[in-house]
Amino acid sequence: MSVGAAGKMGPVPGVWPRPEPFAPRADPAVLEDLRARLRATRWPDAPEDAGWSLGTDLDYLRELVAYWADEFDWTAQEAALARLPRYRVRLGGLRIHFVHARAAGPAGPVLPLILTHGWPDSFWRYTKVIGLLTDPAAHGADPADAFDVIVPDIPGFGYSDRPPGPVLDAVAVAGLWAQLMTILGYPRFGAAGGDIGGQVSRYLALDHPDRVAAVHRTDAGAAVYTGDPADLAPEERAYRQRGAAWNATEGAYIAMQATKPQTAAFGLTDSPAGLAAWIVEKLRTWSDNDGDIEQSFTKDEILTNLTIYWLTATIGSSIRMYHANAQIPAAQHTSKVQVPNPSTLKAALPQPRGALPRGNEVHDAADVHA
Image (cartoon, helix red, strand yellow):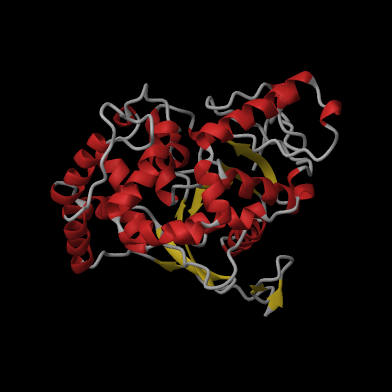
């Protein structure tokens, strides 16, 4: 075995593990235990007409939990997920779960694309777009735009193993993804993601610029700047101020997950209603829904995400990654990506092009070829 840059054990060059098909099935006893816990929820009180102003709305969560206990059909959702080409492979001592969907009937070279989710997600996040990317012709688009699509679960999320020792940060995960793409026979590829997945995609481009054709991120990252604020442009200072204001009103979960994640893990791992409250409030806040979360996600979609977290017991390991990422040196955040890396900027924190965090500047992608 060899030791990689992140200090993890890696495979001997030229001797790669073989991915194996993966189709998990939930234990009926575990599902029945979940339903029993949901029905036995001990509910908190809430001020009259509080709604979502103090966090998750009590009335909505009661409705969602009742549906989860008595109407949600996990078996149907599990069968739908099983129709995806899913595999696991051992990397760095961990079994990594991923979807590997090939382009439909390509007429020429195809660019592989690795998509990395964030939190509170798993591979589930990209299930709606896999078909659009692998078979654009079936959706009225140009068949020449088809990709081979790889969607892994980050270690500690979904069906990938939970690291038993130190949690991997985004830099280490990027290293694993480079190994995964080698195993799958892709010397060159594109990378995309948002939130933690955006960080992983960025480090893929920084550490493997000869292999990454381009990066697309759905956010441009936090404004990490270690110089004199007086040297910043007015737009950059305004962006930092907006970031500070957002952290003051919406960033409590970051502080908790980056400092004391294990404290939160006890309650969130034991109570499915607590797990739902922690995640649903974020899904509502971070999506365009005019205050109605079900404009963005159906109950079945919300509960598929939550049930994956529950069945795999990965809420604790997933939030611990915030702690790991908080230890990444500031210099890493300010390194400049040299490959094309356009960003679709989040409406929650508008980022004018001239105000992107230094080191995260956008390079327009013209034609990126396989």
